[in-house]
Image (cartoon, rainbow, N blue to C red; front, side, top):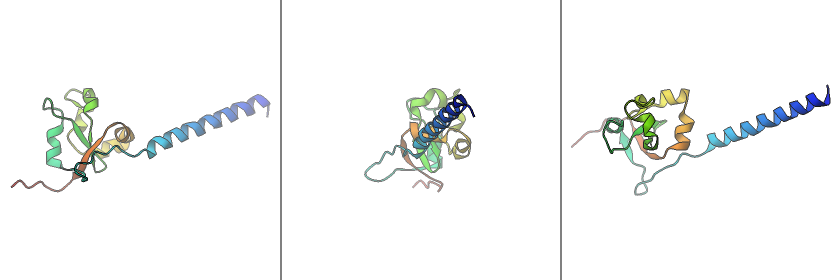
Length: 122
């Protein structure tokens, strides 16, 4: 094998290792968490529906893997008419497991934990 081919293979292998290391580091980053009074806020599915971007000046939330994220900083994507509006105000775990879940974890703060239980109002 010529020296040029060996060098090209070495550079290629090095780049693959660098990219794998960067990707693994991103995947291992802990999600941002917001703690209220030392307790994580419980947000019910019914309550989450009210944070779908349709109410002006209200934050936009979505749920992923049991946590509720505030995606308001990306409101151009999550508000009505945005490409990801269908994910806002609901548990989007199925869709985000296909693509985008790691971005949500890395980019947006957690504001609570999703409860699948029914909210019973007094």
